[in-house]
Length: 208
Length: 208
DNA sequence: CCTACCGATCGGTAGG
DNA sequence: CCTACCGATCGGTAGG
Image (cartoon, rainbow over all chains, first blue to last red; front, side, top):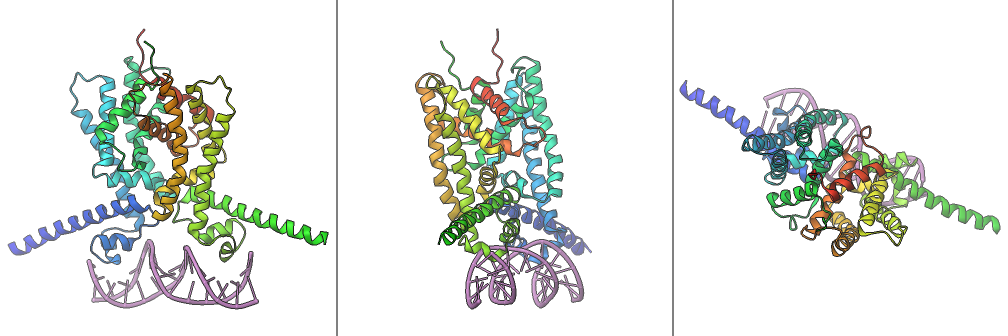
């Protein structure tokens, strides 16, 4: 009886572990090869099982990929919200933007297979799945809209800049760093500092 | 005799026309679906021919795609160099950067299937082809390195900013606009003006 | 979870 | 350029 319960518990853990292993391997493959050139057989082999066995855990390829890419957005948002929550209460609006940029880059570059897979596959995914992912992104976009809006309201950022353009400029800069050759890229922290400096202070030399 | 020469000329034109039509259709499909989900049968059907007939014009899928994606880089570089060549001699270093940003965005958004295909497929392409494309990109990168270097040398841009970080920030901002929903995006010209303002002047509100 | 298999589709080729 | 076809591989399923 006890034996049986243990087996059930062990089995449940094994199932969850396998499921997580599949997602991990899928994230890496999706990041490296893209949506359509990542086959279920590739994913299964990487996870140490047969192709058909994936259907014990997922209903379809689209289902599996949806979970990977949704996690990608969720993990970035979670990390950024966590970093913001850890800020001192005295932090200004610009400090929070710098913190968010740093956390976003860290989520992308440190074990960021899920986030990278999302960014690199989003454009090539079936439209039904794309619509689903777009909704998940909007929550994160609102976070940034709030950060920028508060910085403008308290006078830290120019109010003549379209907040949506600024948000897309920042996100674009950050996400594009995935295209950099790894050898050239500095640490996420240094990278965030450089890009924050450029976009907030401006690249123009101020005379005097 | 004249008849025959005309036929030959016509035939040559027809071949070139077909070849160009194939590339055009392939560019659009590659932009929309990505590398691996664009089949040769899709491309052939869009160009009004049978799948096997593509091998009359190209040696392989990789060969066809290489030509599309290489053209993508070349067309952007050409447009930017053309715009810079048309600048007044009195143009300052920052004017030239603004001109280059505008031309880059115009090449991306106005009939920019080739450039968009390059940007969206680059990450998912076979590594041999990727190495080839990287070389083609480096010429364009040097153009930007030159623009930024001159602007720093003449005192228009801060010299404490890493020129490579600035180049990648600008290119990242510009290329990421392809991810915007079309309904939201303003014209390339307005877009370039907004992003130039953000990156050069900075988003911070200057007191006073 | 595996074995064994399905129909569909892929890139590519032979021969004209 | 087309017809007709190749072997390989795809996502997915039946039955255990």
